[in-house]
Length: 318
Length: 297
Image 1 (cartoon, each protein chain N blue to C red):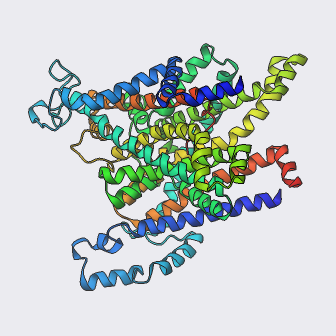
Image 2 (spheres, rainbow over the protein chains, first blue to last red; image 1 turned 90 degrees about the vertical axis):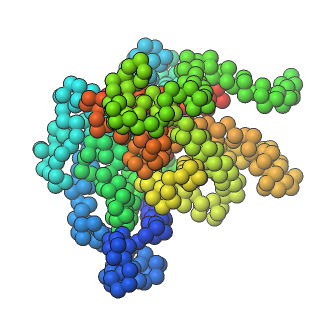
Image 3 (cartoon, rainbow over the protein chains, first blue to last red; image 1 turned 120 degrees about the vertical axis):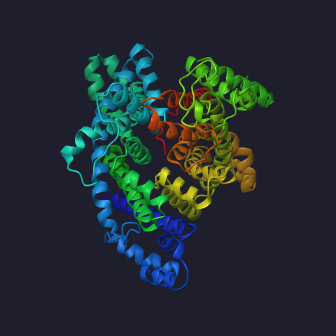
């Protein structure tokens, strides 16, 4: 068991290591480097040389990778090009804002997804299932920028209930942020909830068809007791991993949603830094987003391991 | 009796099999709706250049932001261009690029996955670690990097999307291969001394094909989503090419008084994505594969 956990964590680190190499190589081969972008027209001769030396771009790529990686492990990602600010300081408030957005969506989304998934599974192919499933298909498949645009059009422009676009400074306090984040949270939560509800549904249906549930029905266990004691614990376990993958996948959706709502989070920073060719920031963002992905998946795996007694014994026997 | 059945199945032509699958798909209401939407969009993509009532790039300042009328069915946009024309043309680029992108994704993802599943060992370990690493880079960041690196021409986008969305197929193909690899017919093919290539071609592919095709159909809708998100963010096709993502992002700022310029491309893009999704779902069900437990990776 312990061996398995250590192995799993180690694999996560190997993945991050490969990600760092991929992004480093990826940003390295981008046309134009930091200095030509920064100096624009004056990018020649003496000044270019000086800039290369100042940013340390005059050493071979692998040496730069090693020093960059060593610093990155300590949380130092170097300086952003546009603002001449340490990337750490640029990232801090952005991460906080995105975290607020994502966690609000998760806390709203997961309970709703569970309830909807269970309802649709228990009333399979009946009216509640058909109605909810139709809505979830729409919510799930429509791109984030479309649902976000529609939300702004209907709620903010036609009904004028909430502000449609977030106009706040990056380092805004939580209370000031609150009315502004309702629409973005709804936009993200909608898609996430739809995805998870469908997974919970199929998981519950699978367990309902299993032999021990049939046995429980035959033994005369009351319906709701059977649902809560026999079905749900077994149905929700495999859902954990899938939910983790969905959350991780939504990192991309969060980027788009933030752009639509002009929300000062990591997502907008991704777009800004790529447009500005701010490569150090792009590298830092890639590593951070990948770390979030890897740790969410790791957490889900460990949770499944801990909650599933079968897996435990299986590993010990091995 | 059993042998008889097997024999019959073998003799069915590919066309007969395909039409059987399509009939099964259309027998459920959701599959029928999905197929009809998809078919509608494909036909539209072929005929739209010939039926478009106006020039998609004709700019006329006197016609800016006109409400829908008999002449301009869906109104005009901020440059006086006909929204109806641009909407019916708007799916062509997206459909073409994502369709061929999915084919490439299917090919390399499927073959690499089968190969890794069959060979196993060190090669498998290394490839899967790299695939894992690519999976953990958010799609939007990776696509943005690729696009800013290589540009947004069709020749770049098709292989780029194909490459990036194929990595998930590697996993599915590998898992499907693992399911059949221990079966007797593979073991006996190995015992007969068949080469790896022959085993892949004659024994594994016919058995994992369905799973990979279903996965590919799903990728198609995600690729479309990714592609139009890129256009929306301004990293996709360049103006004045009519494209739904681009149209939505252009018209979005003015939607408080010209909502028609946003609604038309939204309906176009949403219906196509829903159509592909429903079709993929029905396809999976017709082949007897449950795809509802999969996360979008």
